[in-house]
Length: 158
Image: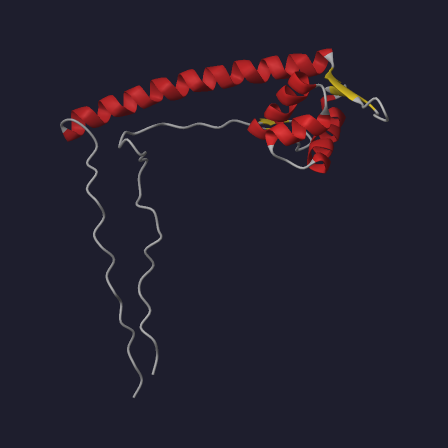
């Protein structure tokens, strides 16, 4: 005899929903360099943390990644940018120091401006989408709960 296996119930219902039952438009952006390297939210946060803390080790902890990952990301960004973004001085007893170069500062400023533009775009798109749904659904998104999962029975062999 075979076991009866219930249907999967861990699937999320379709559609953009949040805890307060409003629709939200979300956008993420990456900057791709010609050789395939990219700077996304994680690497941008790493650069900002290096500027704030002056240390790759502390910046890696602040962002929540391993030191080796942070070092590899910085080496990759330095290589593809044409000029170094982060200048690191080895440690020792007194500890090392990491600073953003003028090119690194310019990249961080450009990424900050990009993220500000994306935040404004996302807010505008959310307002437009919510207004559209208000017009078409008569006051909001229809958030009916999904029907309970049906139990599927498998045929048993005799």
